[in-house]
View 1 (cartoon, protein in one colour):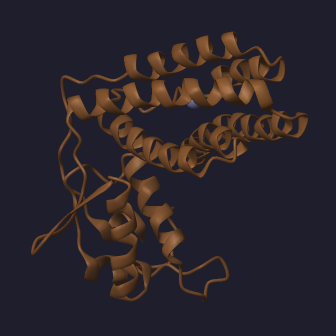
View 2: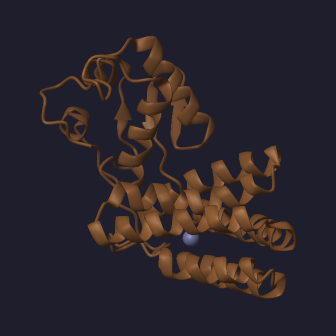
View 3: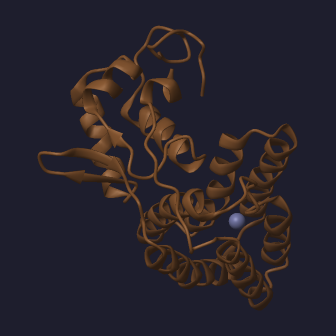
Length: 236
Ligand SMILES: [Zn+2]
């Protein structure tokens, strides 16, 4: 996340400006990894300077983050990192349980050997990220494992729903999980994968409920941290 190159950030080649998607991912990861706190004001002008792109591009990024519920856009006031309530957090996990038990049941009945291998690749990459202590990669890959299941069903509807639920649960987790460790991890994912590979739908559904219950149980919904951050310090 830190390029160590002053206040402007460029693409991998050091020259081309970052795309809407790349900036969106940077901000999303900053929120999910707790660098950017709920309630922080995201000023267009400041972000444009930090990422060295136009304000128009930043506006598109904020709009997209707003659609996913990570950012709240207020007329005449600007954009803020969303601050979901404890009730919102419970809603997110309830809906994940409903959506993901449906997804994994369907997938257990239809998954191909290639699909199993693809998920295995994601779990292995996640284990490597855990071993390396790479927090951004851990968050990205653990979310990717859940999203990939919907993608393997080739259902645009489920993919959209899962994208939003994963983004929102990353935010909720960032706010309400007392420890920084990321437990939505490879050990549980390996078990889910084994059940899928065995095409054991009943077991897969059971494990998914346990997995999501565990994620929810690790949240402390009695408190939230609400402080704002310096955007320059985070992204530059
Ligand atoms: Zn997980």
